[in-house]
View (cartoon, rainbow, N blue to C red):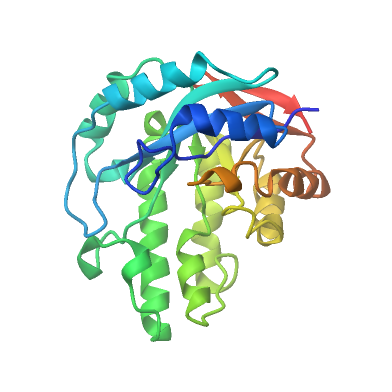
Length: 270
């Protein structure tokens, strides 16, 4: 049975701590057949300052060490989570061009784009409902800008990212209701029309069922490719929620999950 986790972070991410070799061993112990390590490369730091350069050498060294001691039955692929590519498309393209060996580029948005000094959503104060609305409108603008750069992503990451922190503050919101819905549908349609993938990000096993309405809408808009990732930053979370995500995908009409080799999608039955 195929079981792949396509969104994980090693010690090559600022918020990671584990060697890729240890991640591979944990993936094998969790029953995975494919692990893709997708360390952070963000064009903005947490406080919104530009970070237009990236050093690939530590990732290459760690990946090679892991590839030399893979557990039986596990395939290891290399990727990157490229954040805020729209902030500096030239820099984003140069970073990707410097790593032609990549299998998967996850396109993501972590930071506000036009307000709050472009800081990460994590740091915002969501006590004011009006600010929540403004933040989501800002977020949709970022998603529109990101999907306008189809060469800078293969799968669109964690659409629910800002909702994590709003809900933690007691704000229950949806991107598929009210005036936000047409804009989100436009993003999903763009992803589908470009032949790109939508990621079901389980947030280390904490969010699975929440993806159902988005998956169904993506399917209705012609979306074909869906990737699944745990967003694990530690060993115990590798593969968390992946089986449940596959079951949800089936319920939403998908029979295959997308994996990537050399940035080309391949389909695996789920």
